[in-house]
Image (cartoon, rainbow, N blue to C red; front, top):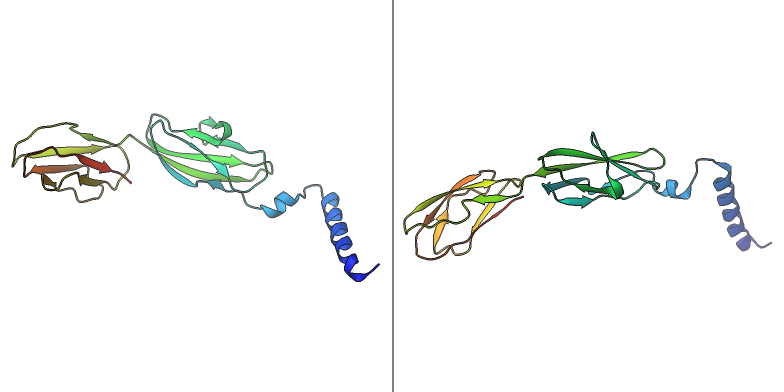
Length: 172
């Protein structure tokens, strides 16, 4: 046999020998020695859902919310109580990975609608969501606000002209 033709035969023979001589050996495991959950961190509103995926490991996978039970198919639905939750995945080789989920109340601004005259000040309160918060005005020629763009939940809008202003709050 020629030397050039002998190399593929040696490689295939070695692969077969390794594959069938070790009970716990698999090419998949060799290529994916660590197990990882994607995403590793998430922030959800109450009632919002997210599906976790496994980036490595050997199927089948079991997903659980630590302290609360199974998560079929890796889909986690945020409970009605804000807080921090841990998602755990285990692969067929008993390797594990975790992800953390922060559940927050829905972002709201109150009051929702209000009327004032020129020179009037209106106090607003941000609830829910996750800081920092950003406050923007649809028309800065109608007024101004004193929100610093951080975790502050109370701010004031001051009207300087006649018109309808829309105040938008965006969270982290």
